Amino acid sequence: MNMPLLHRDWMERIGGAMQFVEVTSPAQVRARRLVDAPLSGHWDQADTPEPRLHRIHAYPAKFPAFLTGRALAYGAAQGMRIKRVGDVFCGCGTVAHEARRAGLAFWGCDVNPVATLIARTKSTPCSGTAVRKRSDAIVQAMRTASRRHGLTEPAARRLRRWFAPKSFEDLARLRNAIKAEVPARSKYRPVFYCAFSAILKSCSRWQQRAIKPALDPDKMPQDVRKAFLEQVELMAQAFDEAGDAAAPGPMPDIWHANVLTVTAPAQPVDLIVTSPPYVTSYEYADLHQLSSLWLGYAQDYRELRIGSIGSSQHALNFRRGHAALNHIGRQIVFTLYSQDSAAAEAVANYFLDMQRVAERCLEFLSTKGMAMFVIGNTYYRGVEIDNAAHLTEALLQAGFRSVRAARRRISNKCATPYRDGVGRYTRSRTPRPLYAEEFVLIAHI
Ligand SMILES: C[S@@+](CC[C@H](N)C(=O)[O-])C[C@H]1O[C@@H](n2cnc3c(N)ncnc32)[C@H](O)[C@@H]1O
Image (tube, rainbow, N blue to C red):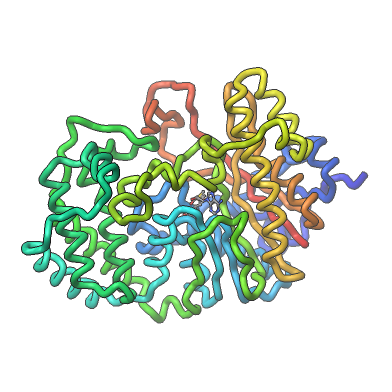
């Protein structure tokens, strides 16, 4: 049996910053070799602040932008000529924007329409001046715009829970003014929809910084017009900072689609850089319900849970499904089953989807391509959900030749490691600790 190796070739070149273990067979993963994956400074911290475009819209579990550059540097050190980058869980377009900044082509998909709205906005070359000019026209038009919301009755009922009557009316006017002032085919339409989406939580009674939908009856929502103008200014500055010259790559190719069923990219990608969702962690459909309903992506936001990997609402025929689980997946699911059968089914479902993701990544890559995953382990009812080991086994079974693993410290977490019931940071000890480390897995063909 091949034993995992601590690779030193690349490490020597960049002064010891980079170490990893390498596994080449499922048996090595089952022997828990990933616990030897070293903490590596290479993946820990950015040297420079993130471009402002990455902060134009909040997004749960956003990827640290600098990791794209580190993955490109790693690929270059391996002698790869990377022309096309992919991200199968592209979220708010962090990798897409970084690839474009590096002058590379990009292909990506995400099942959440709010994610692809933000990703396309970040990938659109715009001038701050043009954005400000249009926003002045929109705010002007808002005064006389219709207050008809045009939503289905259930969608309107749902939204009224979150907004005071005046905010609701102002938002209807604002959305109608955007539609009137910015043609549907204009590249600025998604930009202003993104600005609209970004202010919804602060203009509502949604508990700020909660990772689960929760009403805050004491909250003073922001004024819609003021919040919109501030948001547009933030975005205009971010576009100016990015500048067309700083983003020389072709327009990223971003699909609102499920990675499990999306048509493969017309041209294979050389490098996939991605961070998968976790099981029963974020319900993206629930978290983005204000945006999805206002922008007409769904009549009932729960529709958007369908196909979302890691959603606890994702149905599975457990009896039939579990037979396809890989070894690590089966062990974890059976351990969890005695504690909580519903959670075990959700985890089984997640693992089966991730096994398919591993196969799809191989299908999307060029013959000498490489896929990098940033993934953490979680705990559920005291059982370690070893996402990293499960994915490593899945990658090897899908046909990748080897997987190299390092660990990275998650440095953007605040001083306390605990979250309260709705997911806000808290100083008191709770059963929901945050995770301080995650794995960087690099799968080679
Ligand atoms: C950890 S986030 C990725 C964040 C991203 N790297 C960024 O910087 O924004 C995981 C993403 O996977 C997406 N996702 C979940 N199921 C999916 C599926 N079946 N196909 C494509 N994307 C999916 C979620 O919508 C979410 O955006």
